[in-house]
Image (cartoon, rainbow, N blue to C red; front, side, top):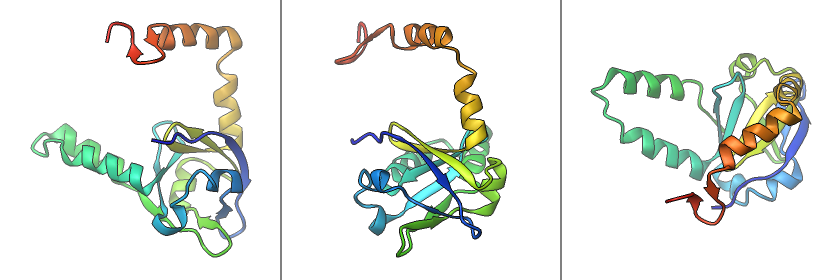
Length: 158
């Protein structure tokens, strides 16, 4: 598994197209052939997945018991809005208008790599999100989240 890294400020053109930054595109070797999938995030943002990562999620969803109403509700809500993105000859993707409206993205956005996915934020919301965590809070959060991990093999004691 290759994890994605980087943070990229991008602009949408008048038609809602975004050029995939070259440094990010290099991390996505199959993107021109396989495309990407964009979907709603959980925090008024969007999430872009490689096709391979999206297929892993679909496999997980397909294993949920569809006789359970909560499972059906989750799958229905999670899948609503999921859209395939294909790069055009200029290396651009057309971002779905409804998803951009959901995430309140104007013409300036940030692509923030987050392990195996790419979060898409309006530039202002992304800055707010980062500013909401002070340096002291970040230090405390690091201790809480990562303090019990053996970095070689997972959580201590596993």
